[in-house]
Length: 51
Image (cartoon, rainbow, N blue to C red; front, side):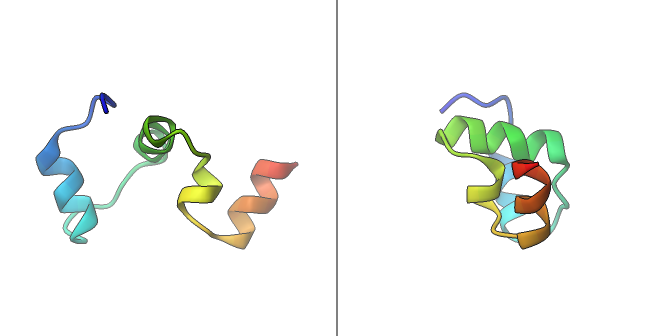
């Protein structure tokens, strides 16, 4: 999966050592072939995406 993010960055995000920006969240979702709302189940976000 080539999403333009380094392994160390992803590990740090996963371990709570870094906050992830929306653009990088979109890159990860795209790399996985899913939507951001599928990746992060936040009702408020889902409402924004569906509008």
